[in-house]
Length: 187
Image (cartoon, helix red, strand yellow):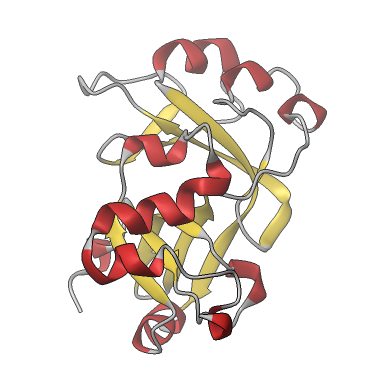
């Protein structure tokens, strides 16, 4: 396997055969990966809850369709902000760059200042996490496709279409997988 940073800033797209119901048809933006484990957020699980209900002042920073997203099954009582940085590589107060144009938002920062400096942001309840070797095992078992992330993936206006759209843009066999029915046994 490539170096530990090979997954950071990339997407994990669940295969139709991934057994874990927490990750059914999910797209996960990977934010960290090292020998002790991995960490990311699910990009296509809006909750329908306004961000201001849990983090007053941050609703205006949330990209459309707005609202809080479920970042994964771990730590649902905590929040993480992820932003798309400007293409010019300009530093944005309150945002720590991760890789490429993705950054982690300091939720103690001034929301107006963050909103003014980023292309868009999402606020997530919880995150997705894997212990040492767990993600590698799931990859070996064919549970995930690893593909390049686009900045628009984080701030898509249609998160419910993201799984299909990301697979479709890969072309070939993955584009065909994007057409699989909800229950692949019916294909």
